[in-house]
Amino acid sequence: MDRGTEKVTPMSGIVLHDEPVRSLDEYIEIGGTEALVKVLANEPGVVIDEIERSGLRGRGGAGFPTGTKWRSVAGSDPGSTKQFVCNAAEGEPGTFKDRWLMRHDPYQLIEGIAIGAYAVGAQQAHLALKASFDPELATVRRAIDEFTEAGLLGTFTIELHEGPDEYLFGEEKAMLEVIEGNLPMPRILPPFQEGLFATAGSPNPTAVNNVETLSNVPHILRNGVDWFRSFGTDDSPGTMVFTLCGDVRAPGLYELPLGVPIRTLVDEIGGGVADGRSLKAILPGASAGVITPDRLDVALSFDAMRAAGSGLGSAGFVVYDDSACIVSIARVFSRFLYVESCAQCPACKHGTEKITDHLERIERGEGTYADLDSIASYTQRVTDGQRCALPTGEALLMASLIDAFRDELEAHLGRPCPSDRALKLPKLVDFDPSTGSFAIDEGYERKGPDWMTR
Image (cartoon, rainbow, N blue to C red; front, side, top):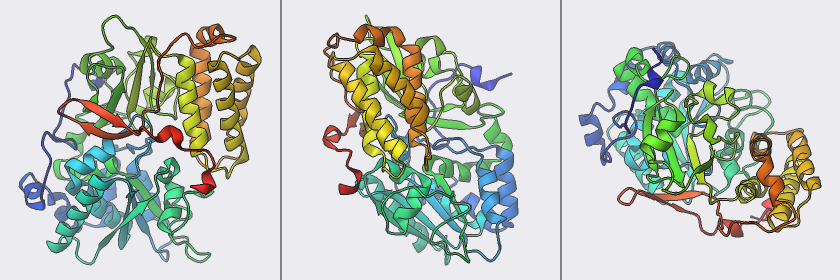
């Protein structure tokens, strides 16, 4: 039976807890550090075997198998200095889960980092997050200090890095650049080929995992592979923390088994859209195809979402009801990717700019069929020579919006927007569980596209 089809309710107890863990002593009381002690008594290869058998996939983007990533670094040239990095620079629109996990239980993350670094053979790890993440910086710094003072890390060290408030800081190759003291501009080669502080004679292969991925590791090794695989589906085992925001009655952060239908998250748990309104579109961040109301029965798993022309990504879902204009939605997200493009790849910066310009023309009521044709054309070229996935997100999202909402886009041509609703980018900066509401970056619209002057 597909476990993902069972009726579920919002759950906690794996990585998302009901109450914050406020000290190392509290963490130890609930079983924390048991996995680390167990791991250090085994060979690194045994640890990687367990993670591979668990089927844990990355919770920050493409869903790459974690054990495979670790083995590629561990098995590289034994003369190279191996490195380990935790990517905590969450920046995808509509996503807040990594920040929430760091606030509520930084200890499971630090234990996961220590285990991952041991498995790949790294003597040091790096935890990189944005300098603007004040609450998270405080909690992870406290956790590192407590682990160190308790002697749990031995001579192993975890270095904290504060980076810029740029979307591309969260791109793994750009993150290595920031750790090395440079701007967040993606490299050509992936981290397992050209890692931190690489030289011609030492490529320093590096494993990079995000917060939620590493937070799962101690629980898997403490409770066992079969326990972990009792959640989710065969190809997407375990749970995932979903950020649900926008036009739903109950926005929030929910940990659910992978494989549940989108309908379960949006309608059963999120409460659906307001009375008198109908669902128009769901955007899984800015990097995948739009989800339309006829696709609510698609499973929330990596492969099912990809097969449906979308993607699970960081599991952040922005819901829009029929009061939102599809042109405005497209313009907001296209402008985000244009602003955040670093301009190393001319096709990316130029293409995202032109798509955004055409959408702005249509939104003002000046659009023609030529604008729609031009947008469609740029989705085919914006990825030329790309160094990162940013232009892929632009191409996938814009092409899917044109395909799904062609009639509405055409009806908008030559006339002002029929909706008086002003949309803002859902760049989430805080969550209030007492009201179940997210705060967004109200000043983001003032951020300009001249990347090099920031």
